[in-house]
Image 1 (tube, helix red, strand yellow):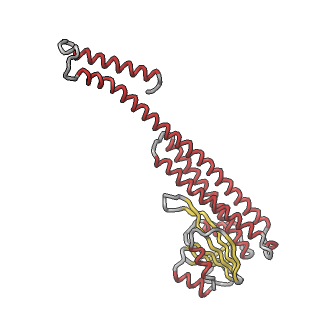
Image 2: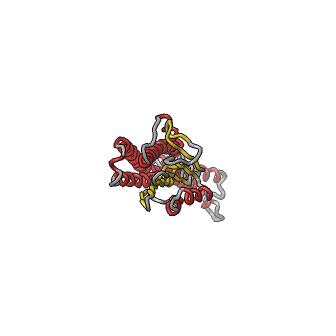
Length: 308
């Protein structure tokens, strides 16, 4: 899907391409790929790099074209990993500014609405890049709040649980935090490289740079805190599940031992050999009483040792 945006009351749509407008393409088709390469002159190698979901954040310069790859948070439809990150490619030169993403994220639509509410316009290409980085950092924090709620729900399920499925829910969240940690580190390195561009660093808005740094740092610290808490929680609950299983096995073993007592007596006196009770009128009831008393003795002994 291809859209065009320009300065107005915030970032507003425009019907077609015009110089210095922002061309945003999400989930590009083959026709849109040809438009980028043939009409706008975007290098095909940059386009192919964005298509790789595992590409790391970086900045490149080639024949007048700037290529910036940023990792943005993404809410998956796949339940195996609820949250991950995807590459957002930013390519610009002179009057051409293009963003390409092969996934439909919540970052860019929210950014556009925010610029309309705050009446924010772009000063230049790098100003828009920094605002994208700021918006992505804010969305990292939003998704981290949702992850925190998921951790609390999983914790409630695990309090009395002995199922591996409940631990796997925490494992899926931990995978999301690994994606977040790696991507935020890459974005932080990318920001420092942009800040130190020799020919452009004097043109950056220092307040905007500071805002991006603060949000990135906060997202990194929050992710690390959640990751540390989750790791400790998984270790603790793994021990709890193992302990619960040991308690159950101990109880079952105790019951088996108690039941073995009357079974042993019945086996001995049920053999076809003389045992002293074969001619006694109340022999069966005497043996039954002995079995009962020995079983009760075993139960009382186990209870005193707290094996039940």
